[in-house]
Length: 180
Image 1 (cartoon, rainbow, N blue to C red):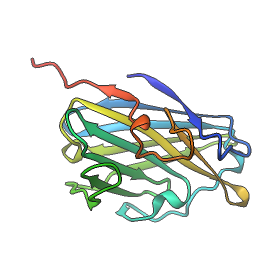
Image 2: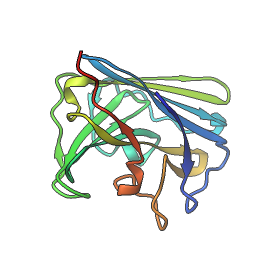
Image 3: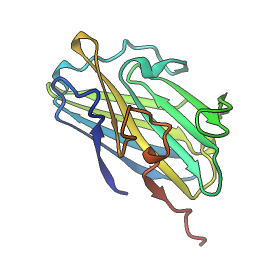
Image 4: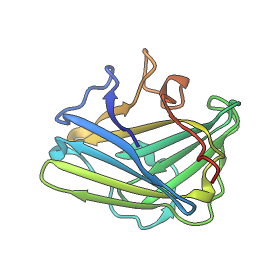
């Protein structure tokens, strides 16, 4: 699967981060696994450990996100994945409309690993929680650095302000698996 160099939104540049990469590692009958790699993460703020649990408002600090939109409609799903190990999943019927908690059969798994200047964040989402394929999707991140500075990273952005729900952010495609 392709690795994407995420771009920060020009309205909110980072303090010390130099790059954020994101990719889907694998998708099988049980799990979708993803990885984000953050370079220049020495001043990055990580939320405190919360344990595996569903929680709202994760995007208010460092959070990694997946947006998935099945072909042929306006509905999409949002997955928020936190280094605290908390997670959230939502359904939207259209652009920022009809928000509802998305059912999931089990908790997502969030695993941060931090070095002096690098953060690797792996996440696994139960495959049964995902919309049917094929998809347009977006990989994104809200990164908080010391002093409360936040930057917003995505494959693509709308021009005027960061908004991961915007159609422009669904810049990647994933085809349905071929029949055996």
